Every structure is written in C-alpha cells, then in structure tokens.
Length: 96
Image: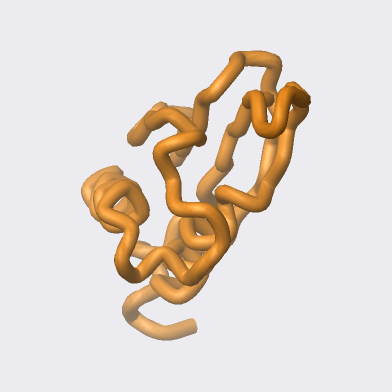
C-alpha cells in the first residue's frame, strides 16, 4: 500500500428517482461524471438507491459530506467541467 492510502475514501453515493421525459425512476446516467471524478481520485464507490426524489448524497465514514439535486449534474460525460462534481470531490477530500 502506498503512503497516500488514507485519503482514498469508500464513498457511498445515494441517489433517488427523478422525472425525465414524463417517467419517474432512479437512473445512474447523471452519476457518470461524479463516478469518474471520484474514481480518478482513488476513491471506491458504492451506489445506493434511495426513495428520496431528486437527491444525490455522498456518505463517507457514515457522515453525509455532500448533497445536491441529481438533475443539476451534467448528463453523461467525465465530470471534469461539472462544477458540482468538483465540489463533491472536494467535500470527500475534506472528510478526512
């Protein structure tokens, strides 16, 4: 293991259903950029579907470190230009 290991977090990404094209369901397509940014920073991710509408929460060590509206995340992509993805990664880093 490298000396950088402690900053690599196990992040639980809770996501709820949202409406798109008149259909309400839980989808992971808007989480792609967030997943890409967290994994590229060395974090492991566990996706967890929750019943709360329009929500994304990041949980580190049992603590909610970030929350946003899932509909405000960029659809698809790598998250590099999505300000919410950058805020989320910063929040995970601050959790340690």
